[in-house]
Image 1: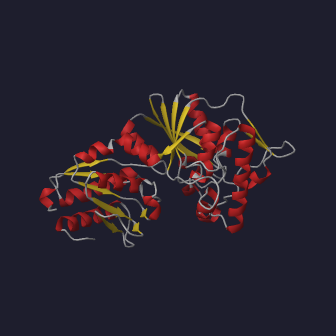
Image 2 (image 1 turned 30 degrees about the vertical axis):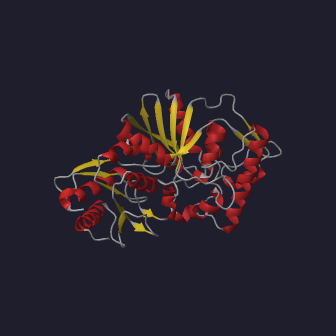
Length: 367
């Protein structure tokens, strides 16, 4: 392809975790595209699959009103978290209340970290009249199976003596019974999962994601045992089987909790976002797609947003430029990539990377 044949470029990235949200990344990439092809029509669609950046991406797609609230953070200390309201729909990004980014590495405490703040955001949205909730799962610093969220909505988790368990996944091995609130959540909840992992086992919440949240080997096994106990009690007392449910392991088992305590429908966050953004229709008129994330690796091609964007573009026959902080592993055919090589990932750095990718693409050279 020559530079003159590019007329429409679809820019559709997700957040670069820990650096920039999807809107800032999209704007920086668009600037890089225009620097190479000034006459090109650039269509921006900042995206999120339910983790970091969901509120920002949905605000651009749905409009509505953002509001900020003080809720419990992952270690119980107050944090500021936003909700988006568009008509009767409320959008909640769980990472805003229980995200790993809210706790510095030296303070991470995966055995006691809680999703209580997510439940507080849900209670605020429901009290405000929301009839439908989109709950983004991903980017959490918790492995409590959603029990903290449920506590904020009136659920009780008791040991054999009837005493309430301590917050966090570390106490769940002592779970004997679950007490249902008098008025359970009755609004429709769609939980957006950024992974398809089950709750338990070698691909489960504790063993795959526990170490990322600061859990050592012994803590991982304690968390696994606690989540297994939670799953057993939920099946015995509520008749709900969540252990093998795809997406149940998302956000440290918050997927399982959303299903059990909210009656949520667990869906692929990437697919939901692709539909909501009209991406497939946009691909029909695009000559090139520019997408990216902080790190593209094997997991990106297993249900995460960037992998789904790449797959959709390939099905539409549209070439893809992948601009990332880091690229690990092979890429699908028809995809060219560039990573930061250790360079800055601020907005100017992403613009520069995109500009370089577009120039090499126009010249026909693989990056």
